[in-house]
Every structure is written in structure tokens, then in C-alpha cells.
Image (cartoon, rainbow, N blue to C red; front, side, top):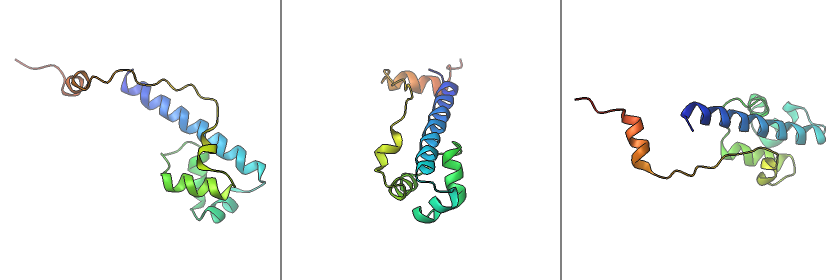
Length: 103
């Protein structure tokens, strides 16, 4: 898998995660501002999470989950097909980073 594909997959995962957070927020009938206040985070952080903008910190995820009355792991319970890495050969990855040797 190329780096571009990995970045795209990560973005899609962040979007799916954000959709789950929004779904849970709406179930509680909370606005983004109300959730931010309860979670003690900035309102724009809730917007960024729900819209898959920028990676969220673990601290923010925990705060938002608890504010929603859920365990953090509950926020990750959504359908998404992740492809796991099966290539643990670091030497191949290092060669790709450095590029071909010049003579």
C-alpha cells in the first residue's frame, strides 16, 4: 500500500469516527457547543472531530466520550474495513524512503 493510500484510508476512518460522534451527540439532543462545554473542550474541536478534520488527541476523545456518557471504546464501534499491515520488513521500507542508490 502506498503512502497516499494510507493517508486516504486514515481520512476515511476519521470521517467515520466523526460520524459516530455526531450520531451519539444527536441521540443526547446536544448541540456542538453544549457537548464542548460538558467535555471541557473548544467548540471547534467538536466540529473538527465530527468533520474528520485533523487527528484528535486521546485526551479529547476521552473527554468527549465521557461527556456523551460512553466509554472511549464505544466511539470506535462503527463499520469500517481497515486493512492491517502484514509487511514488517523495515529494511524494505528504509530503502524506499532513501530511494535508489546513485553511482
